[in-house]
Structure formats: structure tokens, C-alpha cells
Image (tube, rainbow, N blue to C red; front, side):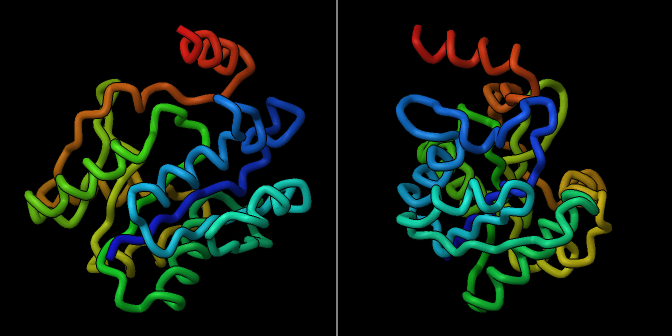
Length: 197
């Protein structure tokens, strides 16, 4: 069983509104990634929220997800990862692996997630990291043998640090579209334009 951990606690300060709730192909960015994880068969699906939690909470009301509120989201992404991993393993102690996902990579869909999981199953590597733009990152899969490492991340450390520190344990999953992420309004406009082509 592979769980999914969706990080949705960030402030989106450049947008002036929660980036997680931006509309994309008839749904919000957050609901898009939730649906992808569920369609790919991930269980449980944990969503970590923090900033703007009162605005984001209604988006989770009818989704088959576990909601985790990280009161310490301001400390950094590491605190959200720790909160999510702890909740996921408490709820599903037998989970074999988890997929770390974010809301602002609109190219991630169920097929991408299924292919990541398949790469893990065929390579037997403990980490499967997406490869794009001359780097590696999320979406990324971590076997349960790495959960303690995730739980020991510093507040401002992302999971990429674990990927880079353990190259011999990593399988790379070619995902050039992973370079498309939404950090600015310009990114958002480009993303909307390309999605209509």
C-alpha cells in the first residue's frame, strides 16, 4: 500500500490568495492533485494545511482525505512534512511507501503517480524522484525505510535533501513536465494558456 502526502500549508504570499484554491480545468489545484492521488489508488491520502486553513478546509470537506493542520507551518516545509508523515504512519502503520506531492505542479496526474509507483516496484529502489530541469524533486516516492529520515527533517529542510544525500538509493523518474510549477501570476497565466491548447 502506498500513501500520499500532499503539502498544502504554504502561504502563497505572491498571490494574495491561497494558491491551492486557484481554478484549473474546472477544479482547484488542490482538488486536482487530490483526485490524481485517489485515482492512482493511493491510500491513505493526507493533506497538510496551515496558512489559510479556514479557506482551504471546505475544499477538503467531501474529499476522501485525512486533513492535518500544521500549526507550525511558518517554521518551514520540513515541519509540514513531519506533521504529515506522523499522521500518515499513525493512521496506516503498515503503509509500504508514501508519495510526496505538492499543489503547484499541474502536470501531475494519476498516470504520473501510477508510473512513479511502478518504477519503485520494478527497480526496488527506496526512493523514486522525479527528474526535470537538470534536478530531482517531487513528486517523489519514499519507502517506509526512509520515514524516520523524513520525520527528522529540520523545519526548513525539504525532502530533496534526503534524495541528494542518498544517490545510491534513488531511481530517477523522467518527468520533464515537473519543471512546470506555479510560483507567480506569470507562471499561472502561462499554465492556463498551455492547458487550453
